[in-house]
Image (tube, rainbow, N blue to C red; front, top):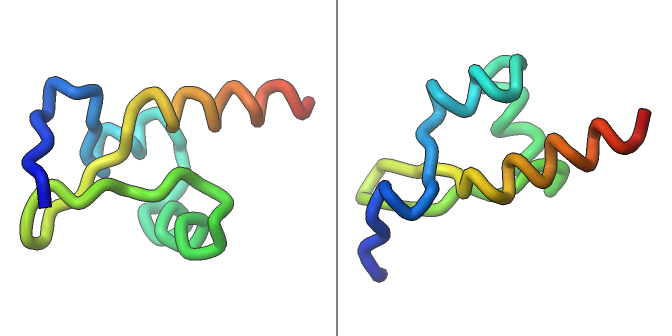
Length: 65
């Protein structure tokens, strides 16, 4: 597995939850259902989300209204 620097635009769950105001459980449920961008493994038990993918997902939701 390749190491991915945090400066690559990755955000951890606490910051993600400020952008997408739902529970962590809902985020994980959406990920399993492929309704939300999948996280990137950055360590043994650590994951982060690509900020650009999350921003695109948010923009798509705004476009649906």
